[in-house]
Length: 134
Image 1 (tube, helix red, strand yellow):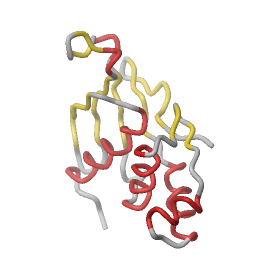
Image 2 (cartoon, helix red, strand yellow):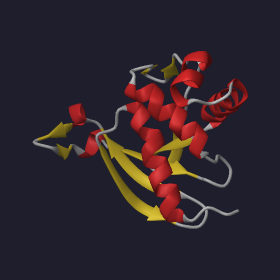
Image 3 (cartoon, helix red, strand yellow):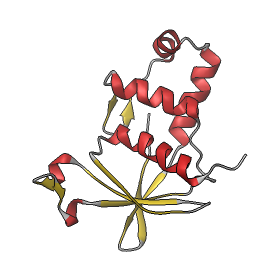
Image 4 (tube, rainbow, N blue to C red):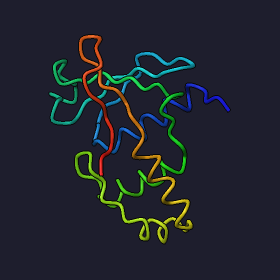
């Protein structure tokens, strides 16, 4: 089933929280992608992002989907401080107990989480990506 772009925007925000963003603004959302800008607290002056510190992102949600299960694992990891930089320290058994899921469901959600890629865009060129690494 095709995802609508409103749901895609929310999923993108939920994923990018893993990278400690404090500002998220949608530039464009279509049936294929979401383009947004993000910033971090240390890149703001008086609560307003400094233009040089804002990062544009592009997520083609048809080619790099984010499942609800992977987001729930991501949010659990974020809330109990298991993600540092782009390296999650997720123990599948602990997540299984915390979320009440069987191990197969947890393993699948973690595998999906590690496959998500959100491109960073600088000067209209993809330069890097937000992606978790083990």
